Length: 77
Image (cartoon, rainbow, N blue to C red; front, side):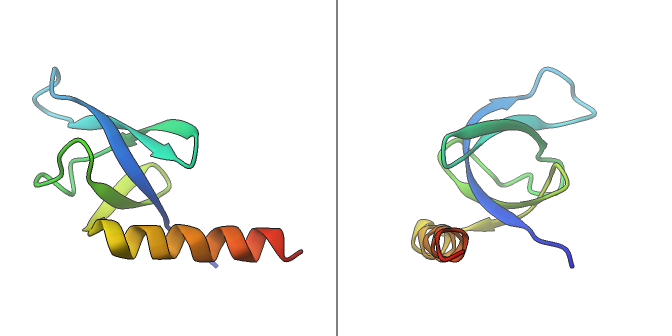
């Protein structure tokens, strides 16, 4: 089973014109993520990330709902 996790874009690096990268915050854990598949994404946007690639931009309400659900599942074990 694959799982895509929502995170918030905190920085975007446009220095490489062939590869748009950014740092994404996953509830305190910040990872480098490829943003090429979501060219419309901006700092402060929430994105769904799978294996280091942002796949979709989420609105904040939906992202927070998903993050809350994931945290509830992790804390129920």
